[in-house]
Image (cartoon, rainbow, N blue to C red; front, side):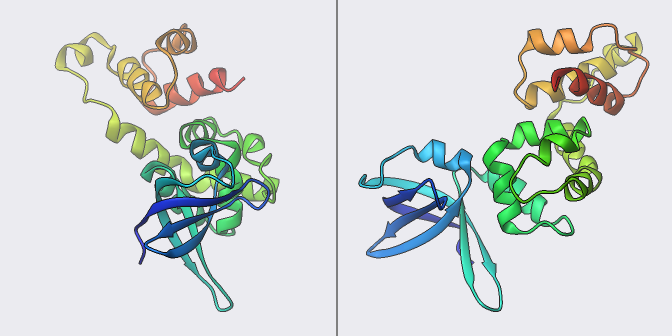
Length: 203
């Protein structure tokens, strides 16, 4: 399996969402997301050394490479294609209109409508993504959140603190998080607080 490609960017096409990376004289064509396209941000004539993390999709009639600027985007792509009915092209479409963080926020807020804006993703598929990935994204959020201190737990602020930390991981500012968590019941569990806050933030 090809883990990554490092070489000169010799071709970049926004219409077909493809890039060609020259690695020691061999040009590898990779399909990319809108996010990766923005990061590469070079004209088709540019020769720039780049690194893309890759996923190889093997079908009966084709072998295709998908390239991502970050491992986070690659991991999110893998999660998406693990959902029943979601293929590589649909996953790329989703990650072309949403970052991994905004996708996680939409799934946590159960906002299937936002996902269905991606080309080729219908309402049923979007709802399935929310259903199958909600717990997985929540687990990733909690994995990045520090454990509450004993003092915070005793004072009842542990759940709010955990929710705040998880929202920071998603990229929201402290002022946005404070406003979203305002007036929420601190007795609710962390997952419910995150869901309620994301509902406010996604409006």
